[in-house]
Length: 116
Image (cartoon, rainbow, N blue to C red):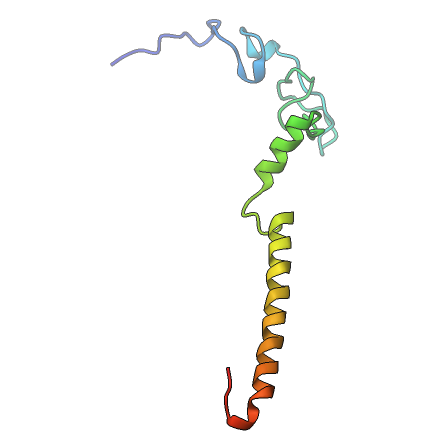
């Protein structure tokens, strides 16, 4: 049976989560955000000074490239893009014109009992 190679109080090596420096995780800076209980949050802080739960909302993309990337990622099926709406509008206009033509033909030839 293999023994655990780390002793319980031995310093561990390597980076901690959320880019905290290696070493004793109990020494990492704390978040300190006010919790619902009214006490400061005791979770380790990230670079911005808050923990992963209290880090704050994203302020969104700043560059044109970032905005375009978000726009493309939000596109799911393309049904409501400008091009699709324009094509549907054109199709519906053609369909209305066709229905009008069919009504006219049926009205013109109703005496010979001919319907389309």
